[in-house]
Image (cartoon, rainbow, N blue to C red):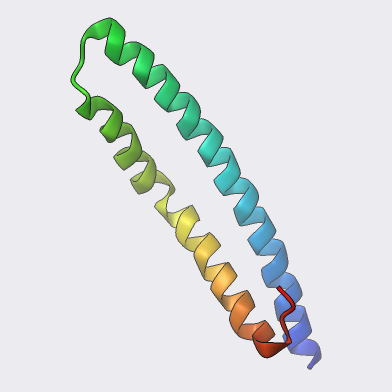
Length: 85
C-alpha cells in the first residue's frame, strides 16, 4: 500500500509540473500568434502562416502534452474508485 501511495505522490508532482509547463507553452504560443498576426499583416503573408504557428507548436510541444496526458491517466488508474475528483 505504501508503494502505491508513493507512486501516486510522485505522479502528482509530475502532473503539477506538466500542467505548469503546458501553461507556459500556452502563453508562448499566444504571444507567437500575436506576433504572427502583426508580421502577417505587415508583410502581406497568406493566412496559412498562422496555421503554421499552431502546427509547429503541436510538433514542438507534443512530448510535453503527452507527458501531461500520461500522468493524468496513470493518476486516475492508480486512484481507481477511491478518487473524489
